Amino acid sequence: MITILSTIFSTSTEYGLGGLVSTKVDVYSYGILLIEMFSSKKPTDPMFETDVSLKQWMCHECSNGGSLINVIDPNLVTEDGGSFSPSMEQCFRSVMELALSCTAEMPHDRSSMIEVAARLKKINKQFLASVQVCCFINERL
Image 1 (tube, rainbow, N blue to C red):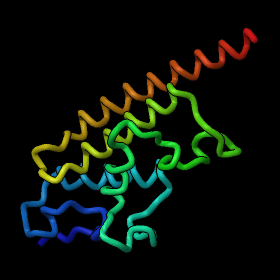
Image 2 (image 1 turned 90 degrees about the horizontal axis):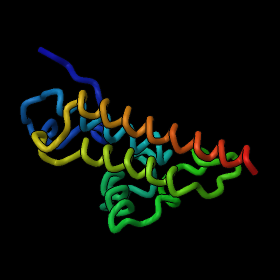
Image 3 (image 1 turned 60 degrees about the vertical axis):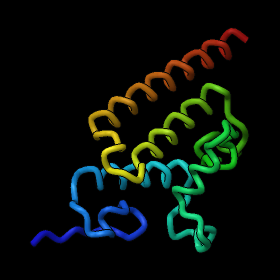
Image 4 (image 1 turned 135 degrees about the horizontal axis):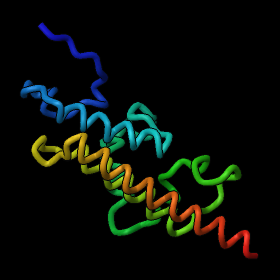
């Protein structure tokens, strides 16, 4: 018998409904972890005691092209919690879209971890390129 340690808040619905456990459950948990890391919110946060979950909150906030300034932990942006550049916002948006794709309701709609890692590398490359451009511009001023 296999025992799986997790919390009810970070596992996918098919695990709770008695479905087959697969690596897609891990992908779901990874998506929740990404949301937690970038928002500094936990599924057990008091704001999620109503009918809204961490995933639903993030999905709502990311829809309609809204600003992520209310979603991303201000400490990730700057030390004083100020605003971030459009290129930085695009990187954060890409990470949150990846997290939401990892937490798709149906397991077959979720990416594999190989695909997730490839997307994260691409996002990282774009972020580093945008940081270098900002540093170059600041040096010229």
